[in-house]
Amino acid sequence: AQSVTQLGSHVSVSEGALVLLRCNYSSSVPPYLFWYVQYPNQGLQLLLKYTSAATLVKGINGFEAEFKKSETSFHLTKPSAHMSDAAEYFCAVRPNFNKFYFGSGTKLNVKP
Amino acid sequence: DTEVTQTPKHLVMGMTNKKSLKCEQHMGHRAMYWYKQKAKKPPELMFVYSYEKLSINESVPSRFSPECPNSSLLNLHLHALQPEDSALYLCASSQPSGSDHEQFFGPGTRLTVL
Image (cartoon, rainbow over all chains, first blue to last red; front, top):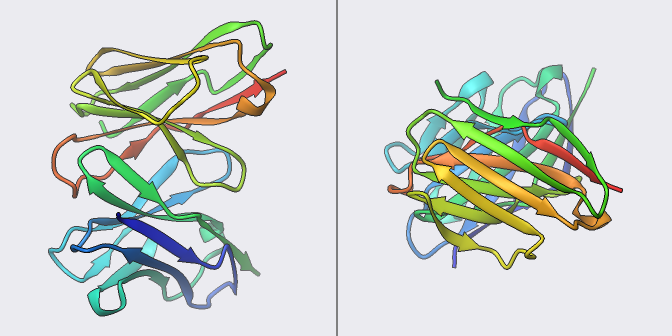
């Protein structure tokens, strides 16, 4: 069965610092992976997705993620955090046509 | 148009009420989803419609009744809910084929059951 694990339910960084949110997947075949962001009382917005075309994926708002098969990881990074990045972030995998599995989420706090 | 709309934005209902949540998309997606999200938790899948047919029901209580009248609309009918059903209800849509296709989410309906 495919699933994703997000390490760290809360991450706190200073404004301007590197953001690193961790996601590991469990799969017997290369999965399709997604990162979503959710602001309070809003729906989820896609940041980026991995579809095997390239291992380094660039998304919106300056985020990127690197697919590492050897580490079964798809960590999300941003070189310089902004106050507006404070939100909940979810890693997700789509193992079959109609089902998505979400990680438990990481709440990012950005300190001024 | 890459938008999924949901109405109402907020809903307060008593345990004996009947209400409905509505979701609409015009992206030509043929898979539509209902999720329930409690505070500080990830979205929890409830139902999936594929080509207007119910394809997945994640053992949801019968007090929740989904309906897909056409390829653009998805409803969730609510009846005799419990206070623990209070949550954010999210609708999403996607292409049904091809595992690389992402879901597009609506803004959600904040439901409070008194």
